[in-house]
Image (tube, rainbow, N blue to C red; front, side, top):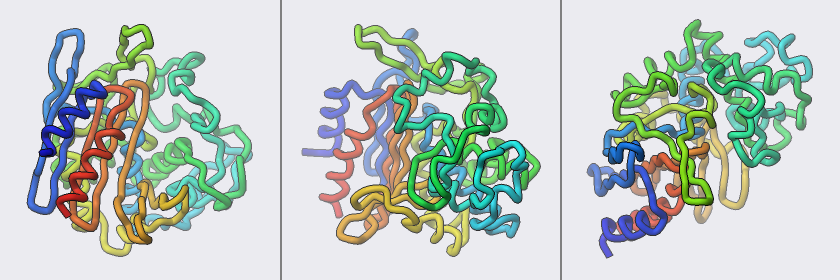
Length: 340
């Protein structure tokens, strides 16, 4: 069965809303668009639609840090207490390094602990989400918490750690984290449709995120997320732009060989054949790297994207619903395997 038929069948089965983009070393091999960017006005998604990608953009944070290391402005072993004012974090271990934060092994408390909390929306029941516009706005949610474990002891997925990394970027560069990424990563990659946009200032061709209720009704996610994304998540990208990011990264256009090798190193084991590098997930098969990938899940947002080094293939699946990309990823990977 042709990839078009397989993707279309699976997309209908799961009622997918978003874009599927597949390419190999020779260019785009498949792309398709599904669902509505705006359900109320029945405006369909397009290939160039901007989608929120939640934690999918932790990779951008890691690249930003990598660029600063490359420029000699800090190192992966730099202690966070040497960069940020640690009187603001009274219980944090002063031995926490940039490496610890990038690999989710710092042990700091998280503002949204996915092993404890199930619904990201619950965060905003007691605080106005529209006030969360920059890195410092997250601090009251975790800065006075106790350490969960000694730095380097184990992996524990941590959004707050990437908030601190964003603050490091701001401290070292003297500009906002989002501006730095847009200027030093998006612009060189010609990611013209991507950026960190506020809910109250969304540009044209941006998909609204939708949360589907059990009774068949739905609502948008404008009251379910911070008003503007940052270092831990919340950027908007188009599918073609994300493919450009992967290409530039793997062709060493954003980072030199030394830094990119460290970014792509499986620094910590997460599960069977699953590892984490710097801001990136790494899957192995038969002791070899099968794919480098990122993913993101928020209310009304889901995202999966990966690079497959054996074939040079790239997969990008953004969605403005809370699920779907994972199941389509499995279908696309079967196609990549057959075409190897």
